[in-house]
Image 1 (cartoon, rainbow, N blue to C red):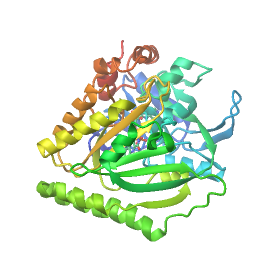
Image 2: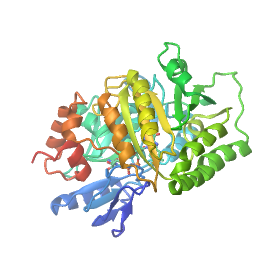
Image 3: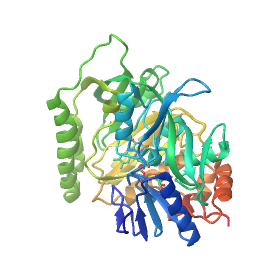
Image 4: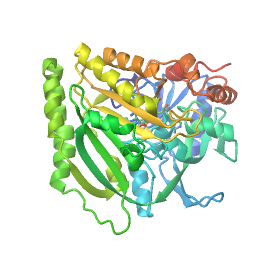
Length: 446
Ligand SMILES: Cc1cc2nc3c(=O)[nH]c(=O)nc-3n(C[C@H](O)[C@H](O)[C@H](O)COP(=O)(O)OP(=O)(O)OC[C@H]3O[C@@H](n4cnc5c(N)ncnc54)[C@H](O)[C@@H]3O)c2cc1C
């Protein structure tokens, strides 16, 4: 355990001065910390890797990191359906979890862009990747173990305390401190990645087709640089036995992922921050530098890549049919205002799921994410895009910047009231609350 210091998130959009920062070595130690905070009338907030852009972690009370609860507890088959499962300490980073799974011939079935997050943080905010037949992390959770406000350690799953399970598997840590998570996993697999720049209009047209790229690829996404008509498409599909395929040569990986995506991209962002008039030209040049590439690698290596250029992000989940009109409106707004946007817009897809607070709850979903370089103002851009997304029934990512409050969110989630009922029953005093949960869920009913 260490004394408090100023805590900052990855993007520099949130900071906190907790009265105590603790890294318990065991579940018992974590439970003692929760009990101690409860007895003194304080508050507790869990922190993972600090990769949320919102003040999800901010507290002036006790901040608890479960970095030391990062072990594989059990690997096996589910009794109910024989699916492969792994139970791990909730603080494990996704990179470490993937390495542990790979050693056992296993993998996560889908992932987002990076592997730096903690597993607890990823599920608690509804982190997702892309793939019309695939769900986000929270829907892959089979069971959790958590510490409740009175310091008790309880287990929850679909079969055992199902309502607590729903609120715990995606709930911003508002019903307790997750200490262990059981995830569904799959046999290890390779992915063939096909990346190609294409005319944006062609990509948008193809999205409406029944045999378009979203339906015919397991994992399809694209990036679009504002002020251009180019989209970088990425299609990742499982390698079938005998498919062959070759990894990316090291020089190409370093050139693309380190030099172009991180080194030069950082420099062009810094340049356009000083000379915004150059942004449309720089974006056009950058989109032309994107060349096609095809390679095969392990699933984790294809799904995730290093992100060293610091940015701010807002992402909205839309009914999938709203993606094209919403993107066209974003395009028109950026061109109409001349806003300085040197960062690409990312578009992804997910299957409908039944997790109470999942952004894909009950509807096949398209995600539109907008980014801004960390030194540039984001307010006007994000506000305008958010208005467009709201008009299309959009749900904001729980870990990314937005302006929505509990009243607005209640209309977007059919199980919102059920979530609040569990939260109020489990934590009526708001031990696990903070400014962000007060905004998005409302204060606990005391
Ligand atoms: C560069 C970058 C890339 C990203 N890529 C994606 C992406 O591809 N897809 C996507 O959907 N999102 C993405 N995100 C968002 C990110 O996945 C989420 O914000 C995620 O929550 C971050 O995990 P974390 O471990 O940093 O959690 P933190 O930000 O530290 O915490 C997030 C929430 O989880 C809670 N929490 C953490 N640990 C526990 C615990 N043990 N028990 C209970 N609650 C807990 C915290 O209190 C907080 O409410 C990205 C973010 C960045 C910065």
